[in-house]
Length: 227
Image (cartoon, rainbow, N blue to C red; front, side):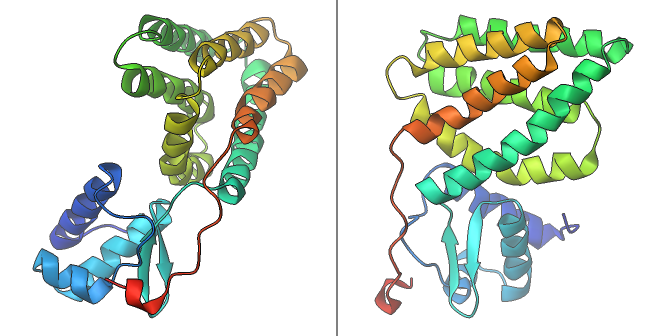
C-alpha cells in the first residue's frame, strides 16, 4: 500500500469505518467532490485514500464519475473463492512438506486453538463476530505460514469480501456447525500428512458458499443516483 499522509489516513479510516458499519449504500455512486466537501478536506488526500481503499478491495472506482462500495454477488464471490483456492491450496501442500520444521508444530497448535474458539462461540450471541473471526484466523494462519508477502497482500485485498461472504453464509441454518466440522477435517488431514485429501477438503469447504443464493449482479447506476 502507498504510504499515507495524515489527512489521507484519516480519510481512509473514516470511509472504511462507514463501509464496515453499512453507513454507505452499496447501490449508490458517490461523488469524490461531494464527499471531500462533506469531510472538510481537499480532493487530493481523499483521492489518495480512495485509491488505497480500492487496492484493499473495499470500493470500485468509476473513472470520472465517483466510486461504489463493493457488494457481494455470484460473480465476484466465485472469483474470490477461486483465488482463495489457488492461494490456500498451494499453502496447504507447502505446510505439509514442511512438517519437520519447528514452525510447523506452532502452526498446528494455533490452528487447534482457533477451532477451540469456534467451538466456544458456536451457540453464543457472538457467533457472527467471534466465530467468524476465528474462522478467518484459521485461514490467515495457513496463508501467512509461508511468509510470502505477495500472497499476504493478495489475500488482504480479499478480506472485505471474505467477511461479507462469511456473514451471509453463517446465517444459513446448520452452516456454522458444518464450517467447524470442515475445519476439523482440513486440520486432521494436515496432521496426517495427507496433502491431497487436505487440499480437497479445503476446496470443498471454500466452494460451499457458491451453493447459496447471493445478491444478483449490480444494476447500472443512473446519473441521478450520483450523490
